[in-house]
Amino acid sequence: MKELTLTINHNNTIAAGYEKDDVVSTLLALHDAGYALEGPALAGWAVAHGWTSDNPAHLERYVAAINKGTRPRIRRAVRRDFVDFLRVKADEFLRAKADEPDVD
Image (tube, rainbow, N blue to C red; front, side, top):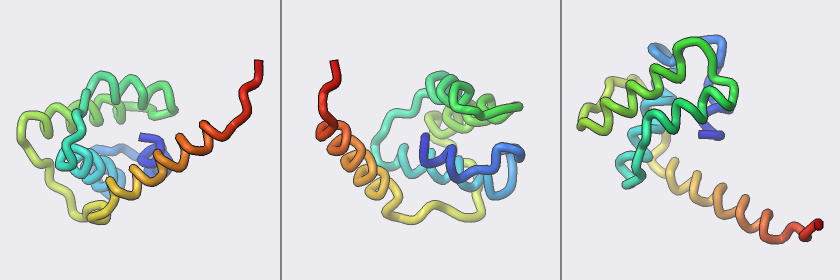
């Protein structure tokens, strides 16, 4: 979600255009890779991280549709290795956190 938040223009709706393509293709990639998508949790995270207007609600609706087996229409998708890319970034983050000294 952090990567997605960095890629979309928060002044635009995610109901159409490039932002929709980015959001839906990311959700589909995660779903296809076997990740469980929880709409209310993702929408809550989105609100807490600066998503505005109706975008968190759109996000939740996309997740509900995908979980029901629908594949919302998009014009372009994230790259095929996007989930692998995210896994590498997550591993790097966790390694960096593990290397930080404990401060008490």
